[in-house]
Structure formats: C-alpha cells, structure tokens
Length: 129
Image (cartoon, rainbow, N blue to C red; front, side, top):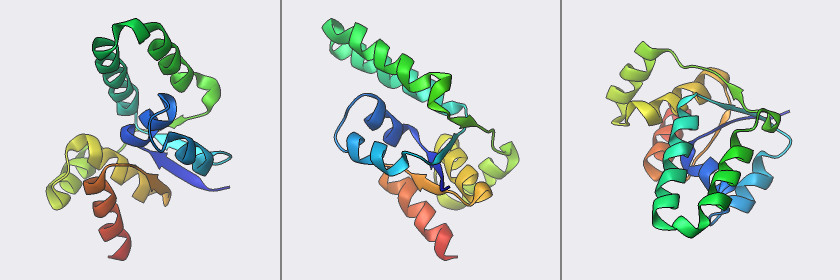
C-alpha cells in the first residue's frame, strides 16, 4: 500500500471540490494518508476564508470541512521533528509549515501530494539528492 503525505493545498482541493481535487482524491484513494496536525489549522483557515467570501455557502463549506477532518477519513497524524523542520526550512527557503510536510514525506519515504509549486520543487530536488 502506498503512503502519501498530503499538504493543505492538495487536501483543500479535495475537501472543497476545487480544481484538480477529484483527480487528487483518486490518486490518494486506497493509500495511507499522513499529515502533520498543522493541516487541520490550515484547512480551518481555508474554510474561514471561503465563508467570508461566500457567506451564503457557509453551511456547505463547514460540512465539507467536517467531512475532511472526520476520523473515518483515516489520516494518520504525525508530528515532524521541530529542529529538523527549521533546518529544512533554512536549506530550502520554505516556511516552517511547508517544511513540516516535506520533512514528513522524507521521514516516511512517502509521496508528497501538493499543488504548491515551491514545495513540489523542494521535494523534487530532495529526491534527486
């Protein structure tokens, strides 16, 4: 069974039905999905932003958030090593948030699922090294 680390950009696309979300959902289906707990807060921020932009859709947005974070989805929450995240952020120029996803993917030897170009490029360069 394949393992995936999914970041907020990708999981928000899946959770909220954004462009590319259906394809990403199919890609990770049946795999083991891992994420640092920061994903929960990033998704909450995405939902809040969406609710502010489209208040009439708040109920639908909140229901999508609830489904995305439901324990039955099976996300395995793992916390990255704090010192390693800082060092990785220094080495790559990524934020600590993004470096946490990159660290977790490297630690687990998992595929990183992201729509963030800078994070994807850092992952690709780390895989080559």
